[in-house]
Image (tube, rainbow, N blue to C red; front, side, top):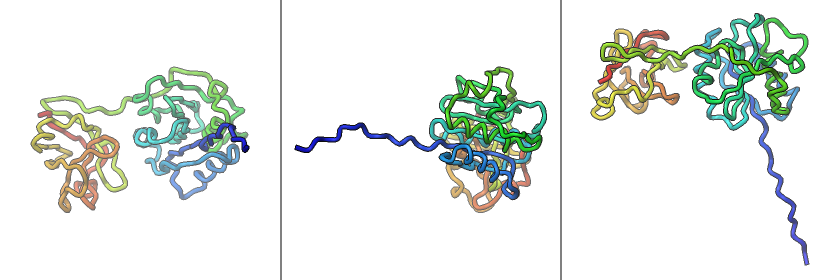
Length: 276
């Protein structure tokens, strides 16, 4: 009589994931070198490029970028965010644990969206040089600090050994709409690659009257947008339209065109939305 194999099934543990978000661009060796450092330490890592086209030195753009992406990754993903105008100065490298995700970034506020949205965040000063490359360049901490710290983290997940917990990390308040004279006053936060103008209004800021009967009016700069739609194709050619984008913000777009070019507007433009 044949005996049954009762050995427990082995569950394959997924390869750890490290994401990269930088303002490095892709014309130079910088991004590829960071990947080489990671893979040399842990060849089993899956590396995902979120983007390397964050506006140079722009901490708000970096914060919005990682804030739009991180929640869609598997548990224990390590997010490396390098937008670092203070590289080589006394600013600290951070290792942040937030729910089931990790973030490695300079202490300059680029993780402000994470700090705003996540509860029970643990922030460490990643100052244990055992995990760095040596020597450490004054101008390329992405290679010599952030990439190796991320890779070593995926080897053991021992965050306490990688730095002391701190509470005085830097963060900035994300711009919120303000009520004034029966309206909400906001601003264009960023312009995406398609020329869509992303405001700091969210779906919950849309007046009930606009949702029920379509009476919508939003002033952006000197232009008035009167059409609230669910997707780009609902707009006529060249017509500015408003919609709730995939990141939850109200955006102004032009079907098959650039709202930024059509309206000659950009980041920082005032936006006014009547509350009724």
